[in-house]
Length: 179
Ligand code: HEC
Image (tube, rainbow, N blue to C red):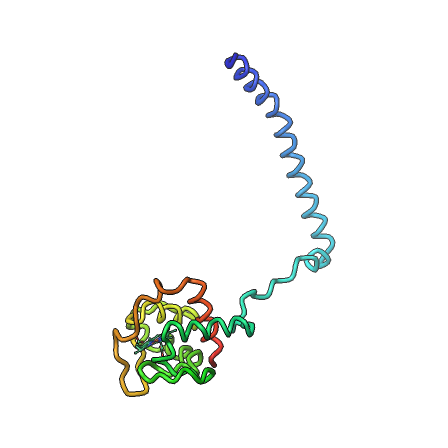
């Protein structure tokens, strides 16, 4: 039973080949006619081309009050506020790590600095740098801390285990607004 079916289908393929070639030829001809016609129409055809889309990604994220409240709870529950000062939150008065009140503006400079490039840091924007420095703090050690030179290996290195990616990204988004 299976063999006749195979033979039959082969025949069908051969029969189909001719109309297929004809169809391709017709498509080719109509494309030629369309190109020719649009050439005669001058700029009318060009004006119909869809406008270029504006970038979809906002440079500075906009957070809802709920998102800010959730991020704030994380900063407290994860102990960030014990080591970092964050102007927006009075409970964040830590003096061990860098003051993060204007971290977004500072990071814009840091990622362009020769010191950062030399450290092997790969971030090309504020969000990437922040993500990197929360997940892998020793990758690039921030230079200035409230009590002098920043200590390395003091910031915990396991936030990747203690928080979900979504939670880390929420903190990154919040810090990206700290201009
Ligand atoms: C035990 C203290 C400590 C805790 C807790 C801590 N940090 Fe840090 N943090 C530091 C120190 C010290 C540095 C500077 C050294 C370095 O860059 O690794 C730092 C650096 C950073 C930087 C980079 C700042 C810069 O100027 O480049 C960010 C961002 C940051 N911490 C965010 C956080 C967040 C978010 C949390 C909580 C999830 C947190 N830290 C918890 C001590 C801490």
